[in-house]
Image (cartoon, rainbow, N blue to C red; front, side, top):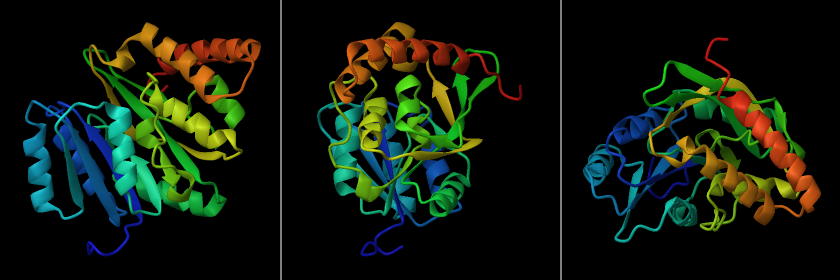
Length: 257
């Protein structure tokens, strides 16, 4: 793909000290059967071997665009910076410790074209570090704003969004779950998402990560409901209760069951 051509998909990857899994994550993006993409990697002041891995990937594949930050600004600002550089007609998000199945983008693009919906998410596997086996989080075929108020059906590394729907400053740095807040904001105006109930991504939950801290996760969910919706307090409390139930199911559904 020529640098002067607009890619079909801009893949956005924020990175901070992720050298353990980063090469696999980058490789899963570059190995997509839908190859018309750019991979914008924002190195958020990494102090481990992440920078060298990014440099190597860029030297081998011209679709990789590294962005270096001298100061650690966090995942929300890193994603926003990448969004401001994105040239694709669609935007996908891939965290630096997650991986995609090779046909992830192709299947999602096909479904979005058939349905005309501007957002697509898929089921995904959860690999908990030190845990036993994998879990699968499932998604319905149609995801509405009302559904998202009750549970976050859009895993960030599964999201594919039409670029014209996405502002450059989509992610709020003040939120713990900035991705959930982003989907609420995008869908509050009436946009719906289509879902592929097939695990097209694998999430790694590392010890000490925010995903592994259930109290912090719960606070982040409440925070997003408060800042990114116009719902009154009583309804927010009801939606938060629904989230708690969904969270229990999320970690209780084992792969293959």
